[in-house]
Image (cartoon, rainbow, N blue to C red; front, side, top):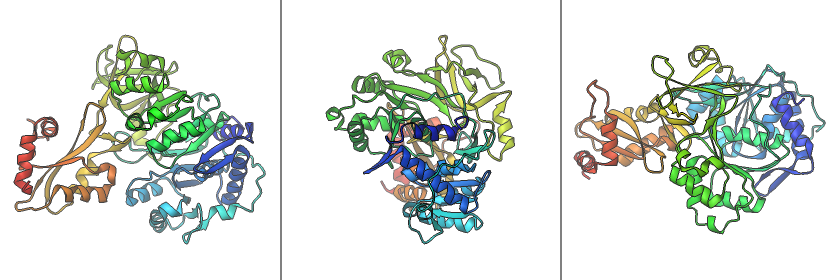
Length: 511
């Protein structure tokens, strides 16, 4: 049973069935209660006609049922895909269709509207709600009277266990295929209390599964709140937590931190974007020797790591650490020629945890996977000691609150506005190294549209993470000698030359 990823998690729940395995608010489920729920849910899905090879798509937040229904579907040999919770409904519908959804499991309180749209687009898909609903079947009610006796997992090691969606470096939805076979790492941690305040459908969900597989406990929080994180660390003696840099900063800046007992922390992992060395040094001073950076991709998992002890060396805080022992990293120039230490080029990775390919996209798979090497799309370099520095991304994309934002997310909506003629997205980063998205537009003669109206226009069509921090309304877009938008000039307008920006804005908005 433990030859598969699912079997490993089930065995971990059974290792100490009386322990609290999952906490969420006032709820506390033991390992046995989790196992019973998994098998009841599996029988309910099986009774509805689902089985090995079928696709179950989940649209739900961080709640115990989200963890358990994923395991239940995998017990039946179904593949599971999790939709991004903060994306526009149209994108959720398209992703559900691309995933090959035979059944949609959703939280009716939060995502009933999106589920209704998906149901109309995919009329053959079964609809199962995690609670009372007027749309589809209440899966929890259906499962409650069924037997909790253990079912033998149906998934074979070579079957597809999950499709993990990532926008990666192209901006279009991509599904990373994961098999049931357990990869050689990451290694199981010692039994721990893991706090998850980022979405289960992202990388933190894997960490939660591994914590359960190791016989530990998971504390679920549905959304990030610095005071809630600090309260949980103290109340539940949390030993491990995943905090992308922007969330780590909020914890450091919260007035509760000096009054909170964080002595239980053993590992604070951060990934998903660059972090400011000065803030990392501050975190080590205030939280202790617990910081652990990973440079990782959905396509291959962790590539490099900077250990807690290495965080004590200020010279290393700008790096992503050294590659794992079983991982090879090489830096290639635009012609595919390996670069020596100190050179900056595209990062290529070869590791035993690399994906087999993208879901339903053999062309893109062939483009990024060659002879076992993965093209990451990230730029970086290795120094003489083997430390990796990630310099940025080859494609025009920004990371905002650990989410990828592409020009299409900003420029696309702006260009549909009747008074906008041109639109360019660009990004800046300040001393904290957090990226901020901006836009520059030109408008039709006599236009009276305001920055606030354009901001709302983007927010309503692409979501809050794509809404620009600032919008420059210019008489013309500055161009390079090749006729492309001059992003350096645009960044200067935001960062260092407010006079020109103000004048340009004033010409259009009467500021």
